[in-house]
Length: 387
Image (cartoon, rainbow, N blue to C red):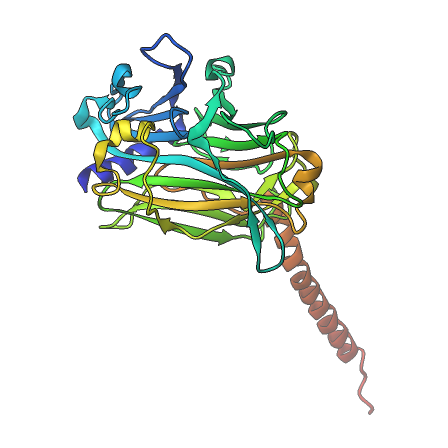
């Protein structure tokens, strides 16, 4: 409990900024596999984001006390059939909290009718082959991109297409300049899921991304939906989803995954490029994660027993699926990080509009009342009694 309180206090202390660094395959000279270590050092703590496409694409999130913790990797063990214990943080006692998100599968389906859906063979992301992330790593912009496609593609859907996860780290708090205009803090990073050029296998196809999370004992996850009347930063979109991990004891937020209920069908998204985005319910996963993922390397064999696995599907499409079919492009963004998820407040523009909308009738009422009283007073003063 005390360490969790220290975690929350440290996250608040780092609101002013963090020193962020990115390292590709630390301690390994090859580029046949991808592992990206993002380290964000604050005044009192250090955030570690470990992204990898070894097995299914995944992000390992670890927060430690102090500013001197370090990631350690046993590469021989990591790339073996039994990777448990291949990834750890030193000193081990500095670790306050850790979690993981795994992007496991992409489903494609068509709606034959309002009650019937036709599913095509699933894209298992642990069976994809991935380009070297080192080619896209930008230490100035703090961005990197995992780009891949199915190792076997019998339908030829990815002959001119790709699937990607774009990663962005933040040194300061702010808001993204492009849609959906997510508000971020120094305790978060962004991941963007991109499907580009892949041919749909049916008419009016929908796509769904399956995500699994790994949590420690004593942590419970909740999927929340929040609506707002303010759509200034994401026009026509009024709903935000947050998957929040909370301490079972005091309900304090430990980590989150947050996204707006929209995707986009353009590299330079505009309001008219919006693609409908739906969130499935959060469920306990009754299947095992891919054996070769970095999640097994860090959490060991306790996944599913000591640690719990939950899963949620995010689906993308329109009433007729025409947007992706026309543009062959789909982009969906989410924030993941530590502590409370960022909360949008009313912007100054919206507050001004509301003030004018609510204040104008009141001003008219007051002015009108004054005019009536003045007219009545004048009529009484001009009256001359008859002698």
